[in-house]
Image (cartoon, rainbow, N blue to C red; front, side, top):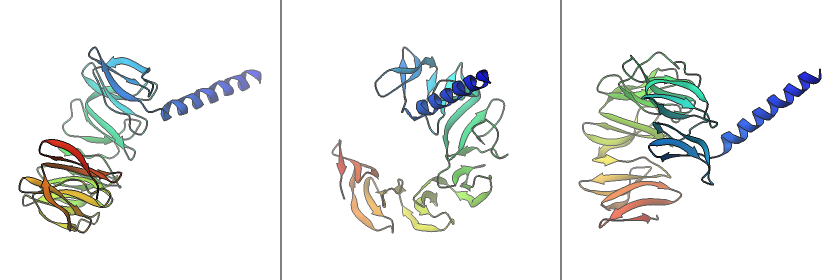
Length: 246
């Protein structure tokens, strides 16, 4: 009985240590051509041992080793072996990989299995339950079962944020809703993501901002403009960068 209690304590402590480790933000850093991860204090948590390393997302990080990609946990253990031609971060429980010997991207679960059978010429992360994907030359949106819920008829499509997704048709950009209808008609030369009820728009060679109805709130006057974050939009004018506050 004492042995059973002892091992129960050990297992509990290991479980706690893994949970604590997973909560520490880690940054990918290169040293002498190899990549590893450091904690906020600059200490190596995972020593440099990879050809390339991406940021952690949902407790996993895609890393490249000996020319192949896989996923590790915050302790540096392999969760999905490096057997893929490419691997992208997990989002809403699904990651994206191109497996060796296969054509196209597959969506996988954290155990490395296919989430559904489809293969895509290109695709993006799931966000708000949908992901932009294309099988041929045109883009549409799929759900987490792999079902196409917005037809593949767009020249380009991007990720949903707050119920808005950028899409292009007839070489003009607008914002789609999750139902596939235009929330803001495709009348813009270019757009960036709608965040905090504002989105950068392009008119000829200049950038400004529209609101969630498509109304121009800042006329196109910047050389470049990025989506808002915490009340500020990063903009460039006369070759210099600053922040714009609405």
